Image 1: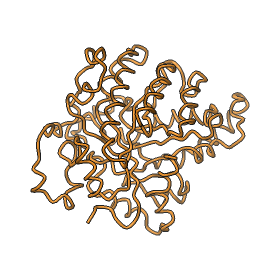
Image 2 (image 1 turned 180 degrees about the vertical axis):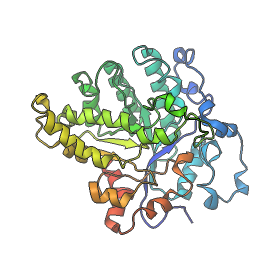
Image 3 (image 1 turned 30 degrees about the horizontal axis):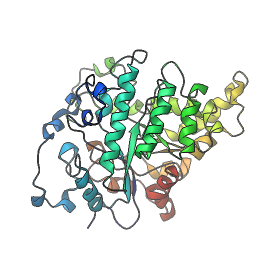
Image 4 (image 1 turned 45 degrees about the vertical axis):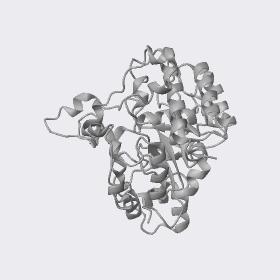
Length: 376
């Protein structure tokens, strides 16, 4: 019996667990020479399982598919195992993101001193690797990685990602070098994604959490989900969505979503309860500042662009029934985060516990239909 059954489940968030040479194998020779090794330090005790071989014949996968996490999970690093894992999970399809590979070329330097050769050479290698991993099963939908720092190079790599077979691209939720993501210099990026019917994704992990380190100097002891102390903790949870909120606010308020009405985007693994007041704040900002910022005089209310073109994945602990009531049923997507520990060992049970009184029609939107619309 699969873990999930009885309806269609489209999973908006899963990951490959990269091995030490995963990215380098797909890099061009000149990039391989300058590509740093992956940093497993922040994965805590989970890194102990890297390269460990399991005798899967002795494990009841149907009973344990959601219990083993990280590099110990079935299908974590082996694409053929992942295909079988989808059968056992019972998911119709899942987006597949990288885990730690972007850190080998993204975020190594300050935003104004990133090496474009490494930045886009690393992106190209990652996009080759993720599409190859997913090529064994059409239900695995590869998500590439494209920074916006250099618009013309970003456009080039998006074109290559499309040719490789990426179904979406992860764009870091930061400024594009010295420009807003809504700057006209980026219009070519958004136009190409719209033309290709390819949504962009924002995901936790491609930017610094906006929490001053001093706030963790509180005289108390704490670890994170991974057993260390540098991943997500309670105060990061409170603010982890802020970079994406700012990024998406720029696209809405500066008219990018008006100029590209078929452009779609997902905000993944950054909670979603914040979306409810954000929709109100968008409209309030538009109304308050339209006199001094004439570009805010858009044909639609700001929140209508968000509703039309953006989607969000809640965490299983968030109050879905309240969120549906306040913001509607069209904005939110199911995700498992497989095989990351942050997704939990029974996300379906936890999601269902927050949907008391929710109709089957709304559940169908959450588990399947909203994802299908986002992916076109």
